[in-house]
Image (cartoon, rainbow, N blue to C red; front, side, top):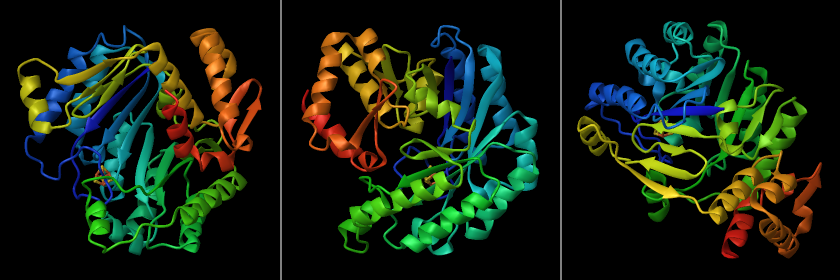
Length: 376
Ligand code: SF4
């Protein structure tokens, strides 16, 4: 089982909080799209001929692309890889791009899952984030998608906004569950270096929300969504039964994936590599038939730590049997020591020989990761 991720590095507007790799200019767009198709061909052996179970167009804003551009990329994938008949094919989309006409095109070319960047259904929040859409467009995009025949729709929402209250967050969640949405990703706003938000905070124009308030919002999302039949299967992700994201789950299941495009990461079980996060450098190297990336071979210790850190995010948790059989007794003992040395053992639970965080424990994920990594 394997997946492919294609990074589309273009956006209409820069959201104030965003540190993903993108540009708001459309310079070199045609050339970059062509090189993405070329890179797919160039790396056709990376996954050792494994069948693709998932294809994911992320960004940036993939919904900016027109039919011809998307077909070019999909054709390149189908020409160079074996794609499973029931493959999950996701496209990240922004609401302002999702006209009925566009949605019908996406359906026709084979996209079968949409991940819509709603972020909030409230105009004040959207303005504050500098999103390109408004609240009415957000609701309409979801309804249009369902009417166009999409029955696997995910939306992203952001909590922890300094300007919004717990009641506002509840309004967002309540609206989400009455819309035809099968999956939600709820992300806590984080302040990343070199973003507009970081600059506003440094200048004192915006104050960060207190952690306790963001924690309340996290708990509200958990309680409210679980009560509405969404399974909380990863710290930020909720899905109705059988609607967990197969692509993202493969990251947490340690499955190999190939990342295409500037800034995209790839993993094949023994090493990680990441493409240059610069459109011009990406373009120039690809024109010379080379791909510019950095690579790290993973030691056993690193593979063990990655396994712990990714699985700790999931409600499935860390398989104690897997640790013992794949990494050996030394690492199994190390894991047990980490757990017993942690100050609040009640934040962990063991069920069916799997160790996972309790909901309270999920709030402490960052400090657990820091503490466990500091042991190295
Ligand atoms: S649309 Fe998405 S990728 Fe683009 S700036 Fe906004 S959050 Fe970042």
